[in-house]
Image (tube, rainbow, N blue to C red; front, top):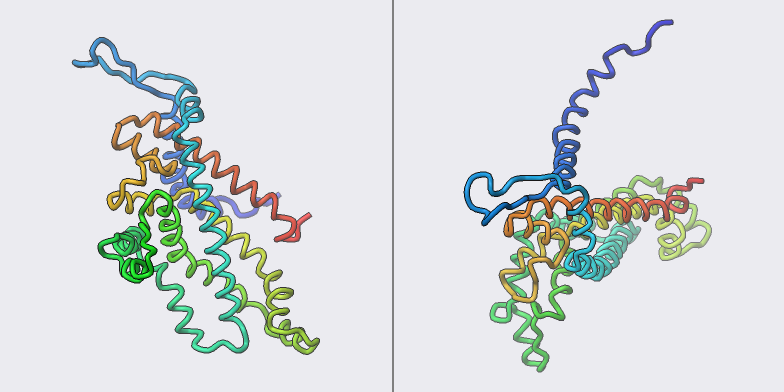
Length: 298
């Protein structure tokens, strides 16, 4: 029997396999290796050989799972993520539907204006908003003070809303563009048929466009969910401006503190494994729940 393809398909796959191995498999494997290691100190810990790396099994992972700071960070991220996901994806869907409507004006300018914040680097955007939040610099403090309602936008009760505002401001444009591009690929005859049947623009949006958009909505939700779990830029960039954000506000900030401030790479690696496991469970769990409805699978 004649062989099909021969070695050619494997040659085409080689660059992808090499890149996957170098930049994904090896770092993950090394992180898993470090999570099983620890430091053994003998004597006063001074001198050559006083500190050496030893195998500690799953002790680091057990300590990470039992760390109250990590779960307190997850609770903060849960509240932050609920605000960000609902607001950001809701606005992205609303803007996509408005831009795709038959009576929209200045659609090109509106698309660019909504998408533009996504082009601003996350650190720059957070610092920009951070200076606007400062009571001494914020233009909102003057009107609020005149109304007798001065608010500290970096205070303990408001800082999570301020961080969510930065994430929503930067993320709406990208998600809107994904949904809008999906809508533009739909044959316009669908909408014309609905109009001939007497459907209003609102009915077309609710009963035709949103069902068509469900796979794209699921896709943007999964991307946004993963980005929310990995929140790091906003709290880290705002932290020098206020004392209400701790060094372990989010799980990734705890990993950064353990790895680069306290120097405990093994604990940081174990916490990273726990975070990755939770992210996988949440992402695939969400896909499992919505798969049948969004992708019409049985």
